[in-house]
Image (cartoon, rainbow, N blue to C red; front, side, top):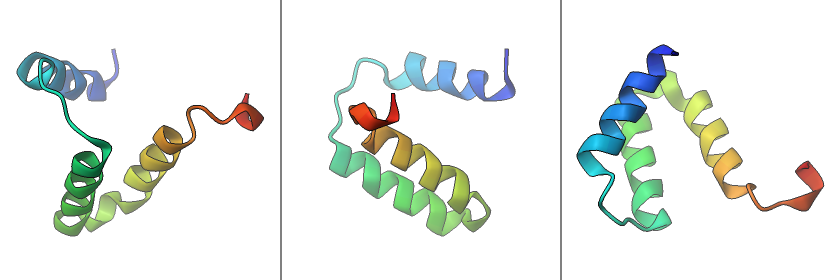
Length: 59
């Protein structure tokens, strides 16, 4: 188990039943990076990965 799995598990347990929009998620990611600029690159990579999940060229 990766260290990040604990945070992912907590997210699923605490907020797993909620529905959110990608606009809401994008705003939360922007806020997180504003508060934690050292995480700009990993957040950007996650956002790009999520945005391109359906791209057939990446498969």
